[in-house]
Image (cartoon, rainbow, N blue to C red; front, side, top):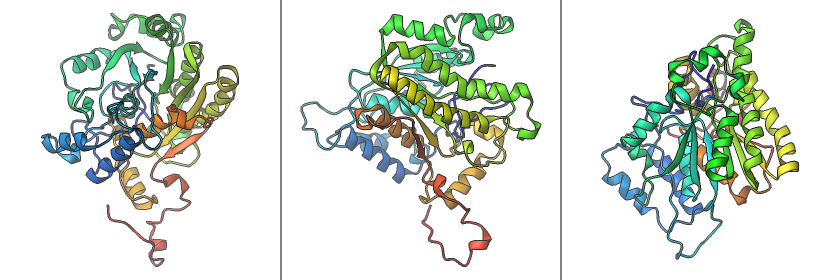
Length: 392
């Protein structure tokens, strides 16, 4: 079973999905509120020492794309001759490999753009059956709108690698997958093969991002999940991170950073998030702490995971309750606004930067504070408490 890109709830459809989307409205374009999006990118602009966010403003004002369909935007570097103020996120000269990018509106894409905004060179790993569609769309300019940086340039992806993170070595690949026509024409797509290819092409990297998850029985309650379904979820969604780090660490420069994506179901009950996916996310968070120790002591590599809130995606919509989760978050989170993919991307850029040089082994929540709540304040039982609400 192929590992697919992580969804907004870090879940996957019953069949492997080619989408890395964490927001999916109509054609899969991320839906965010205009005000919160501009504010979010303004903050990153400041962090990346942009002298002005006017290029981004002009881009939106001149674009035919409506704000409520605005794609994720990242910040570009400003002219180096301008004085630097504040604490800049500077990743110039760094190389980042993001595993789990197959379209232009998911968390993987948002992270890639934020890293590129800070100056990093971008390499991506795409699920093998999705590779042709992704590369064709990229080549034909279908992603050009979402590649636009505030200075008007397009984010460049230096190289796209085929990747199926379920398989560590060629010897692990079953015959039916080897002969599958969706894998025809691609080579070196196991974790070991991709790491070797990146080493051959670039020598080393500085940033490793894991944006992968798959649970073939995610729509089933845990009590109805088969052993194979459970183990498949853990293999694709958590062990794949261990394998990626294991094979990439030898080519990661000391002081580098590795980041994965998790979800609150790892520690709280989320009915409907089944098939062993909650267990896989719990394993991922536990592994993050152990990997932080081992990778830190042996290789001076920091390891963290981002616990992202619910966002619309093709995979999440297939489960059937993503809208309910977004509604619940809007009503109960301390910050009553929709979460956007770029907010996760911005956090990843920070974690990959020297500004986070003492942060490792951490679960960083990017969910408008929902993780802090102990009760659902939208319950009728609290109707007389006069709980403050903001407009959204």
